[in-house]
Image 1 (tube, helix red, strand yellow):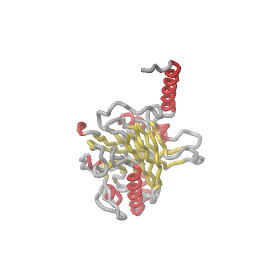
Image 2 (cartoon, helix red, strand yellow):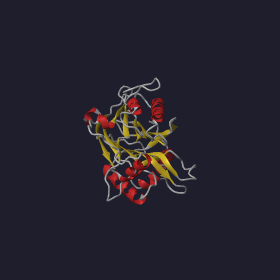
Image 3 (cartoon, rainbow, N blue to C red):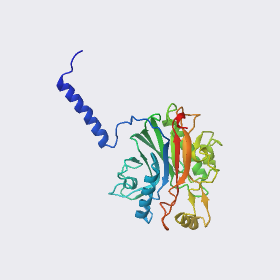
Image 4 (spheres, rainbow, N blue to C red):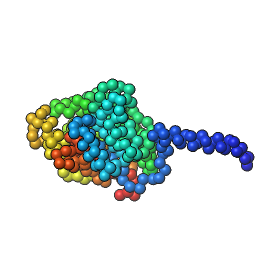
Length: 314
C-alpha cells in the first residue's frame, strides 16, 4: 500500500478541522449521528411580538419553554427591531437552538411585528419562504434530524389579515396554497413534514377540514393528521380564550364578546398516504397557559405534541 506523504496528511487534517469549525461557527453543526430513542417534541407558539408587559412575558415564555424542552418550535408574531437581534434569537439565547427567521434583517428599517420563525435542536440545512394568497405566509426549513427521522421538513405558518370571522375564504385559499407548496418541496420517501402555526380557524371550518381530509377545496384534496385529534383528546383544546385577559381585551374590542373560546393553533403531520416515513402522535396538550399573577406569556396558548418516530417507540 502506498504511504501518504506526511505533509499531505497534515493538510488533509487541517482542511477537515477547518470545515468543521466553519460549520459550527455558522450555526450549522455536523449532522447528528446518535439515533433518537424517544418521541419528537414539537411546540407551536404565537408570542405576540412586543406587546406589553414585554420583559415579563418573555421571561415567562423562556421559563416555560425550558421546562417543556421542545426539539422544534414554530413561532408566529415574532418581531424584529432595527439594530437589534430579532425577538426569537433574544428569547432563546444560550439555549442551543438553531434559529431561522423569515427576514434576513435587510428590510428591518421599521419594526417588524408579524413574522414567522423556527427553532430546532438540530442543524438547519435550507429554507424556503412562501407568501400565501389569503394574506398568510409559510417558512419551511429542512432540519438535519437524527435517525430514524433523517431530513425533516418543518413549517411555521401564520396569516396577517385572516383573523376576522368573515375571512374564511382567505383561510381556504391559504390552506390550499400551503398544501401545494409543501407537496412541491417535500420528499414522499422521507419523514412526514410537520406544519405548525396560528391558523385563525376552528376545527369545523372549511380550511381545517380540507387539511384534515374531510373535504376538498378548489378541486383538490389532501390529508394531514391534526396532532390534537390524533392524540385522542376529547376536550376542545382552546388556544384563544377569554380566560386569558389579554385575549379578553381583544375579543371585547373587536368582536364585542366577553366569553369566547376557540382552538385556532395547530400542529399537523403529513399523512402516511403521502409519506413513507413513520410518525405517530403519542400526546398533545395545550401549554404556555400558566399565568403569573395577572400576567400571561402571550395572548395565545401554545400546543406541544409528542411524536413517535419508529414503531418501537409505541
